[in-house]
Amino acid sequence: MAKIRVAVIGAGGIAGAHLRAYAAHAERCEIVGIADALESAAREKAATYGGAVFSDGEAMLDVLKPDAVSICTPPKYRLPYVEAAAALGIAVLCEKPPARTLSETQAIVDAMRGGLLQFAFCHRFHGPLQAAQDLIRSGKLGELAQIENRFAFRFARAGLSWFTDAEVAGGGILIDTLVHSIDIFRALTGDEIARTRAALSSTLPIEVEDSASLLVQSKGGVMGSLNCSWVTPVAEAIARIHGSEGQAVIDYNAEAGLRYRLAGDENWTARRFDGPDRFVAQADHFLRCIETGQVPLVSGADGLAVMRVIESAYQSARDQS
Image (tube, rainbow, N blue to C red):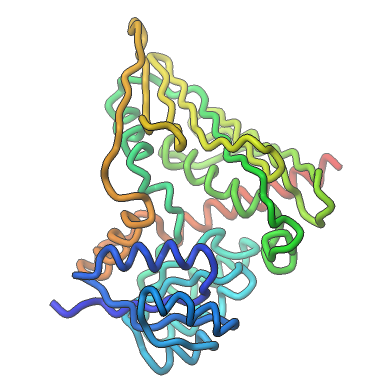
């Protein structure tokens, strides 16, 4: 079988993760092009990963006609590239958040109808999270009651990056980072979010929120406390899952990525994971969907579901102000 020809639009930090992941599957795919409005950024990435260099993403798609493309631009610029890819029948792996708004996300999904669209909620491919899903499905934790999640660190470039430009990003840390927490909650509960209440704050002199807390409840009644911050110096990336028969902890910074303790256990059971990281696993899944025609684990419907919660959260915060 011929190698899948892959291109990447946007040559920033997250593009590096996509390129590294595709390079890990060099036996199945070939990086044929990298585009960025800042051509020097694309050239720098191409020096490591190969591929032709372009300053115009649409021109690259038109010239190279790759089989697949990762769209790694800021949210404001994603829709036109998705539409261009859709017109050429190119499979799309679109970074998160899907877009700035629910309506833009719907436009992306509509453009790709009949084509292969995967949103890059990479935590779905994190080994400890997948193991926690298995633990929940096994019934060992009993009935789910609560899920806590926190992603926090000090964002040194805040105010100097498009991440804090509302026109480009669509908002602040809620839409940039907590978007992952929402998808993680949906993945663990296997359910949609029915209720949302948000609190936002800004400590830094920026125009968007730099800390956010979100209380959610699934249709089935599971409660969630989702928190993130760009201003706390002690980084944390953790999810705690509480059930009627036990607790599980996904700790991104611990050697044992997952630990759990069931009712009656004296000690925690810890699991370590030596498999590929979530970006390499995400690329593997995307390539497999192209190869086999299977539906992506994170589809357009998932992107829409997450963005509905994001819009509800922002409305909740406005209603309280």
